[in-house]
Image (tube, rainbow, N blue to C red; front, side, top):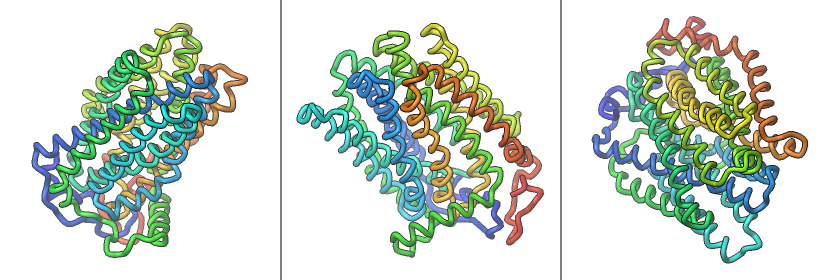
Length: 451
């Protein structure tokens, strides 16, 4: 997918009327190296899945409390959200391969250190888990933003849906394989041993990126790489990202919609261990099966997303995917048996892949290249605010409501919020009437989705 990027990477200008947003051409990565790069990021996603399996399960086993499990979910996501604007500025100024190496190296070291501390300081296990979750979230934020910033620099716009689908498919595959492997390892080893496995996985991804640095060095950065990266320049970059976002009403609508999706998904994830083990009294391996089911649904949607996006405008595609996610959330809240719960959970999380491909493609189409990473970081920050909020809701309300009731409440609140966002989201319909927007040089073009 990177072959065409040699000439075409920057052919889709932004919408803020800021002039020509083209970036200079650069050497593309050969096919085998592209496969290794995508495979390496897929391996990192596998490590993420091990982490998502291990941390809630360890927290619930240590405390036996759904409230404490919600608290660890809050700790796992809040530092990530806070760090995202800085991660975006770094992604515009620093070669992505350095960010990948640094992030994966830190995650490997944190996991191995936490594994050792579980044995050396047994009375501090929960604190160790909190520190691990916070550190992993910061490093994961940098790696995620680096990946978002890398694709537009190597992939032309006419190949973006396909590229995003491949990345999403890789992530969904890890969601299938990861929980199965984690559950098998957890059945054969102490759950804490998963932390050592996670450390090894991130160590391998670090080595993989190191071997690809020859090609990744050719990346053309769009940020002001001549200016030293200082606290002041980082703050300025964050401000530019906010200003750019405010000029794009359709993207603001996408942000609001994604926040509601993340609230439903976050509450579903934060309550999944407590619901599986505490409500339906199922063993740990059934908890792993939840994410596996979601991953299978995600892979199935991966095959149909490119065809669906060709037949539907972005607004219709978003509403279709959102409706599926909401239906999954309703099923999670109303399930009377574990089978019903597992199927609904698979729909809730599995169809998010469809949603992600659409929003990622629209962001690449509409955000100016020179401010892309820093704007994406602000967007992801806002999107993911609802994830720690989900953990906080679970922590506060599990004493009065069941985990399933909280999940159902999150869906009802989400649907009410989305009804208010329709005027902004409807602007996405205009894209097909203007498939090749040009910069307006000082004035926003009202014919192009009102931006």
